[in-house]
Length: 108
Image (cartoon, rainbow, N blue to C red; front, side, top):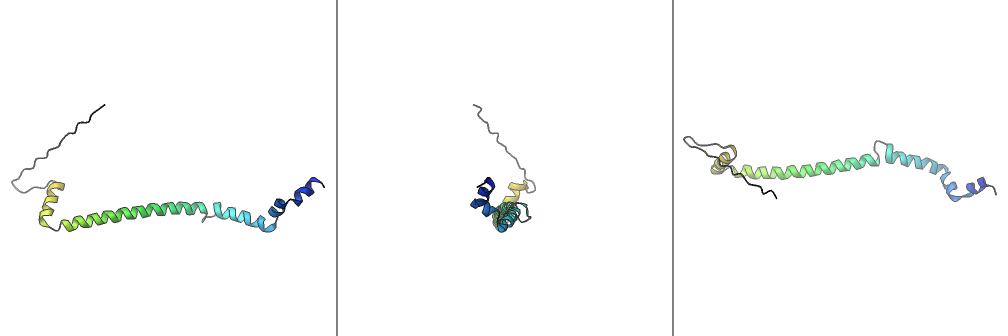
């Protein structure tokens, strides 16, 4: 038997020279890597979806905190306290002193 005949009778050679395999393998490679709906693009989209979902949960928590703050500010005393602390507002004939404390850092 000559060398070509041995290769031709090899079962892997027969499998990979089958017309269906010759058509299916390039199709799969194209669909997985080169198509606009490829696996790589879907993986990027899934990552972006996870990022957006985490952003949504962050903003939902922030909205819940803001709703609690708004509910708390319905009281006039709380509103006054908030305005004094946050925006340094004052009543007439009243002076405000802002005291800032410097913290000393230990350098070892």
